[in-house]
Length: 140
Length: 140
Image 1 (cartoon, rainbow over the protein chains, first blue to last red):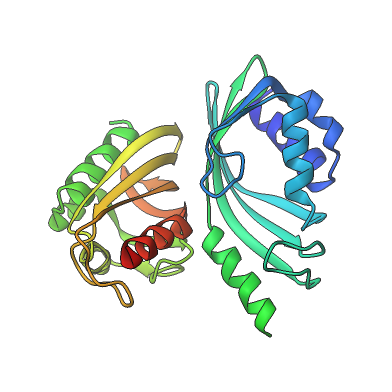
Image 2: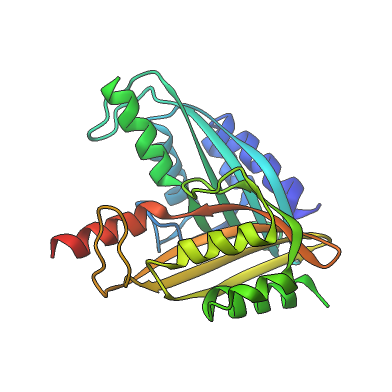
């Protein structure tokens, strides 16, 4: 199975449908977040249970969310992907109470595979754009 | 020549050494910035002269700067790359007078090639991290 097939299933089941337990099918026993500026787990290596906790926590403000893949390049154990995320702000974030408004954010991720499983990632995300949207929604 | 060789030369000569005219060797006649949130030229298609103007303007606050490639994945006409940028803040930015301090920023770019030349990009950058560094340098 091409890594791109695995990744698309991981995005759909885990992140878009919110099926936390499906992590078991996609993640290596040790998952490293090599670089993800602004992510609370930046620099950490997580067990699958640790990853599930990260996922649950980070989806809480946006329980309804979806990643759409824009482009994907795969070679050997490396897969880089660009995506657009949309999420509905239904849970409170410190400083930003829930508004019910939909927001979007663009980003790119470099995934590394090992034995057909996702071993970790290096990620860049337009967090400034999301903060600006949250602030505009708060004022208006 | 692999596109990765072209890209590395483009990064080194154009962005790192600041040789604006070297754009002639690397860029397609029309260069599209399909997506680059926060970049003033986001969404535009530029001539090579237009790209040189963008480059000159965006390098002015950081005339001493360097992109270091972290990882690169190439397939067909697509190349995705992750990088770390470092720059010395030597020119004024609105709201942020020059401090002489060095800053860094991480990002990823998806380049598309056409006839061996770079046709455009889709980019995600940790601008929030850079803004936080600029603000900390201003206060201290």
